[in-house]
Image (cartoon, rainbow, N blue to C red; front, side, top):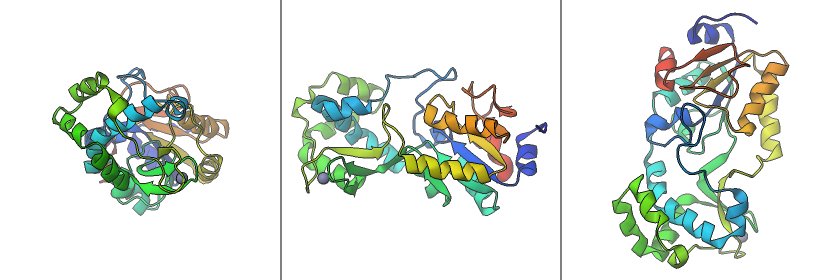
Length: 269
Ligand SMILES: [Zn+2]
């Protein structure tokens, strides 16, 4: 494996990059990170697929929090890290950008060669008939049905969360599918849920075509992302990582840059 002294050197030497991004890419756009520098949960663990599908109270709590949290995601704008990675694509250096983020900020920055590994938060899917609708359309329904809950938006997170934790969710109305009455779920992969097989296969084919892997802003604690680093290592493709704090793949990567994503990628802009 060739030694690279800097990220610029790494990008210079490897023509075609398989780019894997995570939450660290979006933190300076105001989207909170789940984990601290040790890869541990900062706050309570996100809702699981099993709890969401099984339990109506879990769904009421999820959508009540989402009614308020969606505004922040909806208003988020791409930052310099997203723009730097879009620039790599313009330079013809991106084989694919595989993102674990569900915020669509890479696309907002101009990246087109993107696979949303964990889905997208701007869409909602019916678990009965598979019909998709926009999150904005559901937001209008949620507001119409739960006007009284909008007062809680006065206190934003983290205190807003605490307020919501103590609230009685039985009065929160959750719409179901207009066509079949099925359960509506954000079109994202929840914890405890598998990434669709065809999506994994498509990403794996891109990995085989790439010369090297570039990881940006991910601790790789979730196996769905980590396995791509394992596959790259197993076929001898070098990997570089930009992340504040440790990653699960520290033993598998050739170059580690412990900087904020925007700073580490600034040489591209
Ligand atoms: Zn349906």
